[in-house]
Image (cartoon, rainbow, N blue to C red; front, side, top):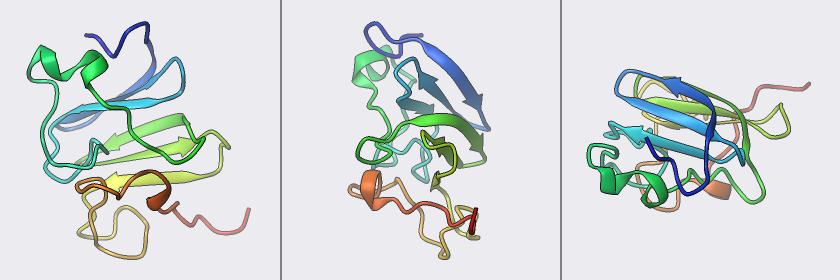
Length: 127
């Protein structure tokens, strides 16, 4: 499987229908089922069924300006990443029961302009 020219995976998380990898440059790429935006690409189109959807054609998840991932976890229809500061968490995908931890029930990552700096961090409390 190709994740992009010169890219290798240093961590991978596999869930029920989709998978994500942290690449050697700490960027994240996700593929598979995407009904609720769990790939974090800004749409609901599945990726990875065809070779033309992988490699350089597969967009990286936008975690925010200057942000990268240190750890990733994939659940049913959602994904969470611990960011490069080892304390900030961002989650995207299905949120009908508040499972993203953002204080609402709005899916994230299934529409344009919901990722990157627009994606709130999960409030884990002080320290």
